[in-house]
Every structure is written in structure tokens, then in C-alpha cells.
Length: 286
Image 1 (spheres, rainbow, N blue to C red):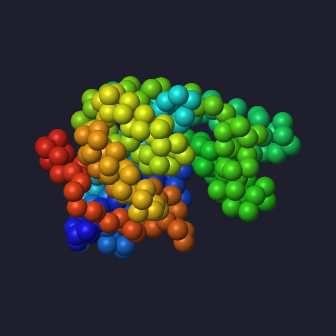
Image 2 (tube, rainbow, N blue to C red; image 1 turned 180 degrees about the vertical axis):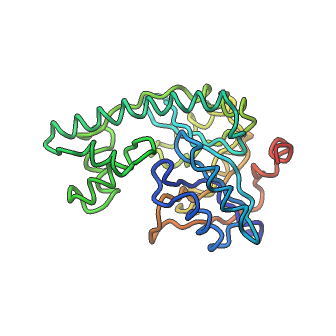
Image 3 (spheres, rainbow, N blue to C red; image 1 turned 90 degrees about the horizontal axis):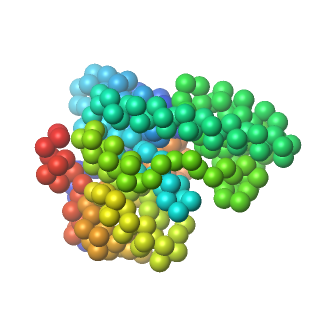
């Protein structure tokens, strides 16, 4: 059964990482789409938050803007992302950790460029770097540059053909473990959320293992409602959250305007889920 509640979208990206809208434009779009509680969760950076708050605070009816970040981690050779919600963006421990993450991103990005160049795709690093601007360079920037320069029809095709595990431009991740990221989020006063669990393309057995070990590492919540998912997927994630005593979260993982992902779209809130914003830790931070 679905109930009408506060429209929340707690996973999104700006040009501070691999999104294509500025923090100002992203908040403006969220307001236009009727989102009431919104989190910006750029990859390994808090750089867009000050601008987002400045614009939001200038509005006659501002939304409830949550400070967030999406931290890349390594689990059994997989890229696993942990979203930190309600973090203190002035926390020095978190700032130092994210600065190190940015260094790791640059090392990996340079190697991706070298592998693509050896495969005959010249200028990919420079092109992706130009798209990234001041943001940390990511595979998303590579995918965008390669799609725009005719190496595939769109960004998903670039990932499938060049950047996925085992493909020409794939470079194994060099991140730290989940427990370290979760601890950093907690030190910054936030709650740790396992991002898009079904997006890692794990078997049912491995997904159960991931969620269990994430909980054991100190995780607080997991995303159970995504912008694109089947009803079976949603029910499975909710069941896993219950089995592991994890709070539920919700988010579009919005990067840019498209026909398939939109801020607040399809983010229904089924009954029977203990939502992350209902927890006492969240209430205390707000």
C-alpha cells in the first residue's frame, strides 16, 4: 500500500562531481519538481553544498536541503558506494578523508586514460578532464566525452563497451573499505546509507552477503526505493533491510535531465519501512 507523504529525494549529483547541473540549477529543478526534502550527494566531495544552500535560502519557500556525500569504497573488488546523509560539511576529519579520495580518483582516472590511449582512443583523458573542470575526474566524465565524440551512441553504451569490468578502459578501484567510510560518516555526525544495492549486478547470494557485511561494518540504512526499479526489486530490498535491521532510504541518483531518471519521480514510500529521516539520530542532527 502506498501513502502520500513528504516527497523526498536523498541521492543526487551536481557539477561538483559527475552531474551536469550546477548546484543552483539542481536545487531549482528539485523545487520545480515538487521535492520537499532533498540531499545533494556528490561523489567524494562536499564542494557544491555551499552554493546549493545559498540559492535555496534565497527562495520564498525553500526545500529541506540535506548535506550529503557519496563515498566510494571497495568490497571484494567491487565498487560499493556509501551515502552519508546529514553530515557536518565543516568537519575537518571528513574534509581530509575526501581530499585523499580525490587523489585516488585522479590516479585511477589517469590510468583509464592511458589504457584507452593504448587502445587507439587518443585524447580521452584531456577531453574528460575538460568536462570535469574543477570536479574530480570520474568514469562518468569519460563516458560523456566518449559518447559525444562518437565512440558509442550514449553513456551507458560507453560503460558497457569500454569501462565495465574486464573492458578496455576498466581500471580496478583503489578505494578503502566500507567500515572506514562508515566510521568517517559517523565522525561527521551523519548516517551511512548503502547506495543503490541492486545496481551492483550481484547474484541474490552475493547481495545478501553485501548487505549483511555492510550492517556488520556499522551501516545505518540502505536505499530501498530507487528512481528505476521493478516492484520485485523494491520488495526484495525492503525485505533485506528488515532482515538486517537497517533503515530505509530513497533517491533518484539524478545526474542529468533524461527520459528515464527525474528528481522525485517514482519515489513512492511503501508502508512498513522505517525511513532514515524518522530515526532519532536524524532528528537530533536536524
